[in-house]
Amino acid sequence: MLFPLAGCATTSSKSSENTLNNPSEARTLQDLIDEGEAGEPGVQFYLGWFYETQRDEPQSNFEAARWYRMAAQQGYVDAMYRLGVLHDLGHGIGQDLEEAARWYRQAAEHGEARAQYNIGMMYDNGEGVARDRSRAREWYLAAAEQGYAPAQNNLGVLYANGEGVQMNSAEAVGWYRKAAEKNYAQAQYNLAMMYYYGRGVPHSFVEAYSWCYLSMANGGNPAALRHIVRHLSPDEVREGLRRAGEIQREIREAGRAAAAPGVEDLAPGESGLD
Image 1 (cartoon, rainbow, N blue to C red):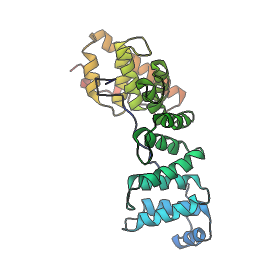
Image 2 (cartoon, rainbow, N blue to C red):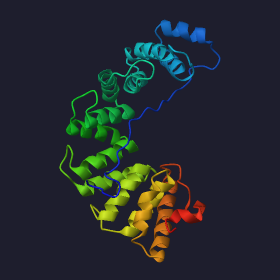
Image 3 (cartoon, rainbow, N blue to C red):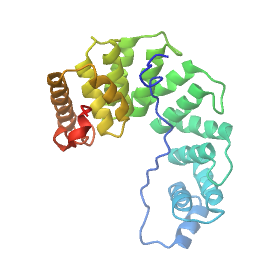
Image 4 (cartoon, rainbow, N blue to C red):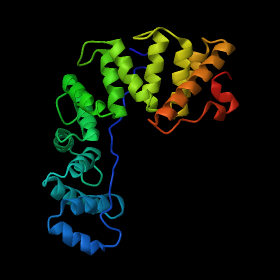
């Protein structure tokens, strides 16, 4: 495997996040239903979201899919994406990966980064479509160029492993770094492993420790940090923590992401020295 420390480079899971602008807090549900039935796609999307997330009834997701489909058929991109998610996860409507891929692709073709990432994942894993790492790369790249961190991470994995592209460690590092600088834990871990093995960057246990620490602070696995610390002296651990704090401040100042817990917030045992 490429990364024996954890088995492999870590890819991101599909996106299912939802964004919503409530059309009105004042209108009644029946008012909205009437407007949706009259053909207003924004209201149709809102009703789909309402039934998906706010109603705990056996038929809620069927009703959500019905409203999303009405909006999607009018070109409402967020509705296309949500339809893809419902069919992908099978929440109350039965999983249908081919249908999920169809809706993700439609939203992706309209520039929706989450859908571009998800259809990339489907090509990457052969879910609902024939496995095609080259197509996966194309969709990851489309989302990555919009700054979507999970896609930047997965694009890095393709370059690190030479899947769908010629292996290029320096290119992998570049994409990992873009996502890592957004406080994306999986990319921080993957970047740490590139420093650990000296792939695409000069070998550095200290730099590996710094990025792995940030990954752990963002919810990553502490086992890798404990492994790396075995290669470091106490002075090098302190330098790694100092460097992690420096990276964190750079992220804060750039305003790219909410800051990870500060070095000063670590409990004593979390440096990996215990």
